[in-house]
Each structure stands twice: as structure tokens, then as C-alpha cells.
Image (cartoon, rainbow, N blue to C red; front, side, top):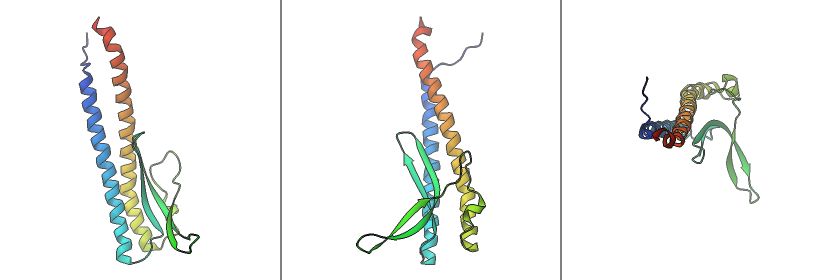
Amino acid sequence: MLELDLELETYEEMLIVLDRQFEELTAEAKRLMVQFLEIAAERKILLPIVITINEDKRYRSTSIRWSKTVLVRDERGSKRVLARPMRKGRGTHRYPASAFAFLEPKLRYQVLLYEEWLAIIRYALSRNCTVHSHINHTKNTLAKQLPFLDN
């Protein structure tokens, strides 16, 4: 008969590794976001597009999006920059190249290079969340069943 190692600590260790990987991927996305903003500093202009990252710790999720920048005036007449997220579509981790058609060619090329990396990070984060959820569910199921198995 096949014996399985039903140690709950093993599942906890796997979850810790996945959490660490999730944090590293999110940190890499933030690094790319800052690096992309440095392009604006070099060009001394307002970029028409930026990378926005939203984290929700409650649900262990991170969204990495491209956002169009819009200059708006408030009631006092001062200007503010708003970032409006662009849609990439459901079921994909990548923005289509056509989403960046409004950009000048040099900037579009840079955005497409960044998008390649961001798409990989989005995909890895998605897989990480799927595996984390599965392991967590398995661990919780085993925790409920272990008292019955000990008898």
C-alpha cells in the first residue's frame, strides 16, 4: 500500500515558498514600473502611458496594468495627472500590440519591450495563485480529516 506523507508542515512550507515567490514577482514588477518612469525623467515630458500596480493583500492578488495618463484641472485650476487603466481583455496575460498604437514609434517600441516582461510576470503570478489556492485547499481538507485518520 502506498503511504503518503500527510505532514501539514510540508504544506505550510510550500505555501511559504509560494508567498515568497509571489512577493519577488511583485517586487520585480514594481522595479520595472520605476524604471519605466525614469524614461519620463530622461525625456522631461509627461508620458502618455504608465505602469500601474494594484495590490490587495486580503485576497493575495496583484494587478499589473498599463494606464493612459490624462491631465485634468481641478476646481482651483491646478493641473493633476490621472492614470486611467487600459483594458487588455479577459483570459489573457498580455496586452495586444494594437493597444499601444496611439504612442509614438520610439516609445511604443519601449512599451512593447516592457510588456513582454510584464506579461511573463502576470502569467507567473497567475500560476502562483492557482497553485497556492490548490495547496491551501488540500492542506485545509487534510487538517479536517487528520483527526479521523488518527483513530
